[in-house]
Image 1 (cartoon, rainbow, N blue to C red):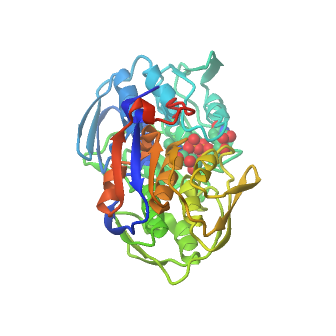
Image 2 (image 1 turned 180 degrees about the horizontal axis):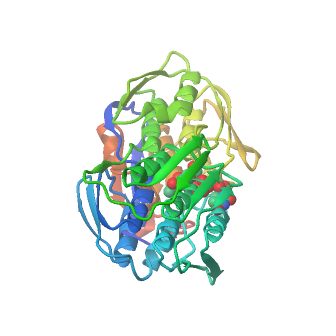
Image 3 (image 1 turned 90 degrees about the vertical axis):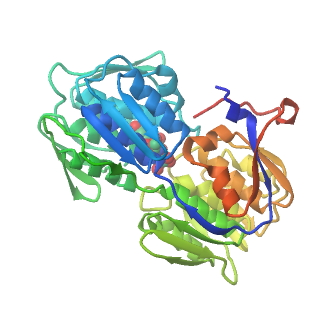
Length: 443
Ligand code: UD1
């Protein structure tokens, strides 16, 4: 898919220190599952702190195609689900992002048979959906995959409760199964579940609507099915986006600036804060704000991504941009997605000199002095990492593939500009675009 933003680029003159305050928006990875959960409950769902994002618009298109309506103003969103969802979700939208798979659990829970294309999403690995399918099948749904479409048939009565131990604590599979189990008949036990803050946000919302969910252990849930959920009378506020907050902190660190990241939850970012401290940055935080400034000396660190509370895979490209400026050899090991280093080739166009020790580990020998170039985002978080590298690089760099960044960051460019970055959004003229990249809209 080629959209106007896929032809646009971000122009950055590197070398300026970021200074000032930035407010974090609501979490992309929370609002999407919350919206899909609204499919399982008739009535009006009122959300606050909702970020304006491309993936949010795709979700709203899917909900509309199922008969739901919505009203959006600034950071507020009201979803009206007056009658049982019907029809199939908009295939074009569903195909464009990974989280579309989250419609399966709630739709099957209300007895709706559904046909959707296999989900797209960032091209960062094979991203199978076997755990989603296995769990929903155990609950009585019949699921077939043919010609790149998933057909999920709801049982005649309700879904039945299940006992399942996930072979990996997948975020999406945990969310799909939770929303399916809350209305199933009987008591479900889910083991080895994901426990990211966004999962807890979903559980919190469902519990407020009457769901019976108990977190027995950190990765173990007991869910007693109820007949019906009832939407809240008051608005539900989405948690702050920890990946956005982390991106701003790393941007401040990259430029040796002084920034205050406001409206965030420092307790969701412990692994990042620890690595930034180890690298020599000065940090202070309160319950909803983090302040970062440069230290006296900055040295290399080693990072291994992992499931929460380990270092988030969604912050690795941003931290690698920072590693180029740290003294000594840093390494980053990726354990979640096998194809998450596609952007390294682009970063090396800025003369980063990053090498692979093996396919899941890269080495950065710092400090290297990055030089301007035209580079292209290969996925959402890679896009953020490349822009951060552009903030350090000498001269004017252009980052293409803006449509990836718009999937998950609200006002990305204007927030950086307000922090003092020399950054602009530009429409690309044809001759300007790097010819060897396809703007395929791979999300
Ligand atoms: C979510 C986040 C994404 C983040 C990721 C890991 C959303 C909308 N996206 O993605 O930003 O990078 O968590 O924190 O919340 N897997 C299987 N089988 C499955 C499902 C997953 O093997 O059925 C594997 C995947 O291939 C991957 C790993 O589990 O290697 C993690 O995937 P998962 O946690 O499901 O990520 P997403 O929910 O897609």
